[in-house]
Amino acid sequence: TLNARYFHSSFGLRYLLANMGELQPDTAIREFIITQRPLDIAEALLAEQPRIVGFGVYIWNVAEITQVVALLKRVRPDLVIVLGGPEVSHEWEEQPIVQLADYLVTGPADLAFAQLCRRLLADDPPTEKVIAAATPPLDQLALPYRFYTDEDIAHRLIYVEASRGCPFQCEFCLSALDKTAWPFPLEPFLAEMQRLHERGVRHFKFVDRTFNLNAKIGARILDFFLERLDERLFLHFELIPDHLPEPLKERIAHFPPGALQFEIGVQTFNPTVQALIRRKQDNRKTEENLVWLRRHTHAHLHADLIVGLPGEDLASFGAGFNRLVALDPHEIQVGILKRLRGAPITRHTAEFDCRYSPQPPYNLLCSALLDFATLRRLERFARFWDLVGNSGRFRHARPLLLGDDPFERFMALSDWLFAGTGARIGSVIGG
Image (cartoon, rainbow, N blue to C red; front, side, top):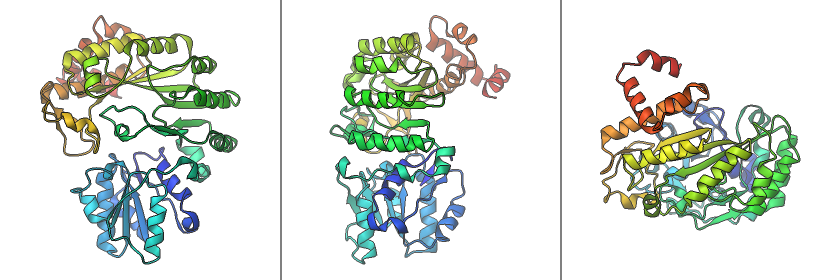
């Protein structure tokens, strides 16, 4: 695959390698970054004389991988190219990269990729190009953690997961297609965490969509790390904002500064919009939990809001932003709505005249409620907020800049900077 940065590691490729069975000795992971030239990537792959190359395709690398696949097929037409990943698992019929490739595995390919490779190497190729992978029982998967190398541990982010799936149906997210959340068997998972810890891993990024859904399992995992607490330990979790049971609160409060980061997807406070996109969220509990976390823990709080959700106009978004600012999370990430392939958000496209970019990441360009000029202003607002509000470099100036209406204040400031009046200030902020 092609990662966004060298710092990232591909969790998915390590799952594939872990589950290759007897083919594992003849299988290798090759990771590049999207800033490398496609020609150089193709050269490196062809130098190893592979028979099959499988690509993990995501929204951030599809353009670059398409170029690599085109080069590989031009030089070695006999090379079998297999695609997988969320970007090609839905609406794949007209994607150029799928037309170039030999096979496509949609859905979770942990076991399906190895099965396909066995058939190809036995000269028994499937007649169908597109293979829909069934969700594998998690207790049947070989876990991938031993395939993090010493170099990964020293220089890269280490991803882990205690569960897969999501029980919620928020339509902007591909997890809306999941039926529920499934936990991995806990004891084998903790044994793997112990081995990673013994190898020197201290930064664990949990990719679970709903870490705090099961309080019992979450408490066991937090206890595990509390028992191994040192000055280097850092844990990153995604939390459901309105669900914080007492067993979790009790343990979270014991972690020292710098040990925990919570990514908390608030997305919108508008109840009408929440109902429209099938997002179940108790706003009162969300506020109570954020206040409690801010006052009684040392966790770093990163909260998310989405611009452009169906039914939300500029005034509604601004009110939600101000409401979240008042809760004082350490960071507020303002993101523009993206139309992910396969996400159910498309059912609102006609009603709200949503028009998305045809190029990744398929961000909203305009809608019936937010015209193109307004969306561009909001993109600049998000950038300016990130530079000033989230950076941590303006602790004294930030409260003065916020005023009584932070959204209007920062919108005006970002407009001013964009107009060129504050070009020097903008260069200093950005520098």
